[in-house]
Image (cartoon, rainbow, N blue to C red; front, top):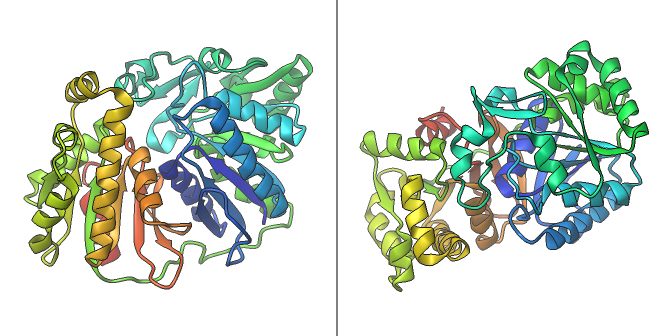
Length: 421
């Protein structure tokens, strides 16, 4: 095993694994820290945690437990993966986890680079852009759990870190691998422990990855990972692989579960409904009133599933989300919806659904845990950052775990059509 990764949510883990597989690394995503050895031989493992929005101390403890397992498995390099929109708060959890991993590995410095140009996430002079907008002007300013109101990542990361945070500006990145190495060495000599790195193209990501080939720890979104397999190939550790994304063909019923309230997912839900496909709304106020929402939704879906996929959605506009949070509380509203969607997922699998698309990191975490899934084999890409995966075991199902911000407007339709192509 070459690369050991720790992701702070389940869809983000899949996003990272997707980039590794597309670049020739056989990759398995585990749900939580494995209890023992893996069942198959792989080049990389992504341990998916649900640690993005929990207390910083608990996020650190879970991440260190994952690191311990990955070290025992023999990994040569380690990767802490967070969202390409740097989802966090002034208390963490990116800074505290990164610093704890650095200390545990005895490393001097680590980069922080959530850039993913393919999905319109770029960093210039330490400022994160979503498309043409600074992060603080994007839809992320309305995120129900981690609203991002400052685009300057040096400032954001410094607020949640004990050590000094630096910047590798784009002038150094554009000059290539050696210039990046020199800048990192200078920052480390000056006492910097974590440093934001600018990136506006995939060429930048490859140069950053090459410059970090010898770093024990990389912290980033999924973008930097596109350059890591080549590092291992240059070192003679990774042979060429043409079949890294192969999955078993599984027929059966299909469904979509959407809990994300991001702009991208709102558009995907709207596209599904506008195309005349069946959709069932899951309302948090109904759940709070004690209505058996999951059971009722499954009852409505029963006669429809035999004819085609059904969408179950709790997706809502920002003003509606705020109204729900004001009435029920932020944590309570999110937990109610996640639990209902997880129960729906259980009912769907019991009803013979073997192809399931799940939108939203928190929702994906709840669904995967409810289904008792321990590991996923990563397969072919649907859209940048989102692959199909297959569960392990005697009765596998196909899962697509989509970050709320990812995917084209027709993602739900396209993902299911891809399986029949």
